[in-house]
Amino acid sequence: TFQILTPFLYAKDKKNVYYKDDILIGVDTESIEIVARYNGYIKDKDHVYYEGKLVNGADPKTFEALSYSLYSKDRKNVYFENKKIIGIDVKTFEIIEKNYAKDKKSVYFQGQKLNGSDPKTFKPCDPFFSLYSKDKRYVYYRDVIVRGADPNTLKLLATQVVDSQKYEFRSEYISDRSSVYFKEKEIIGVDTETFEVLNSSLSRDKNDFYYNGEKLNVDIKTFEYALTGSCIKGEDKNK
Image (tube, rainbow, N blue to C red; front, side, top):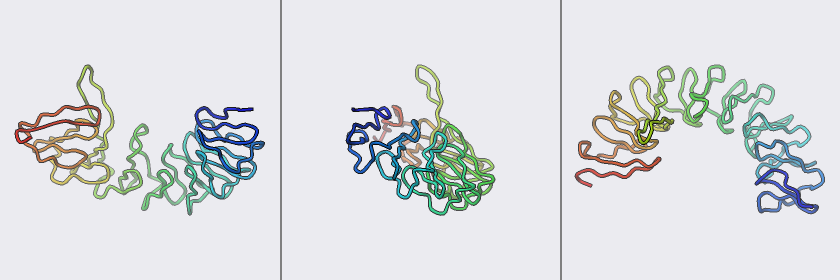
């Protein structure tokens, strides 16, 4: 009687429902159904589950997964994964993209409210690299305001690597007209005109190298390094 409900996630037999290798206690095998095959939601006649965890308070009769995101809703509430989003307006709620959503009052990143956000002017900075976003007032890294960053002159800084071929990917470095930032923190004292990103962690300007936004204080003339993905190995004359 064993039956796979979704590959690698859910299965059942006549006695139990399983999430991976675990038995889900109390799930009704007769009424169990998949909410959507592209995420971890299932439901029975009484409850809703996300990746084997109960979605507390969710109404299985009106519950639905939203787009290709981990947001969901029922007639009373909105959820991210298995957590209810407190204070959200269900009637005006809408998905912006997989991590971001909004209602008439605020914007949310993975279910966390972006304090001070303006839903009318908010947008992700890159649809393929959605850790940074902005509105008319602020720049955000995930759900945190990047203090001092100017949304009007914001740039996502790409990494360019020359090996057997040249390719490009987004780093977590950004810049505006006067500063450079790593994640939500400004890099103090950086020379913006000569600043460049070398890989997702390593960067440099004319005065120094930086690792995850922190100055390395190396001898820039003799510093030699090798890049492997996001890792570096390097030394200068002082080792």
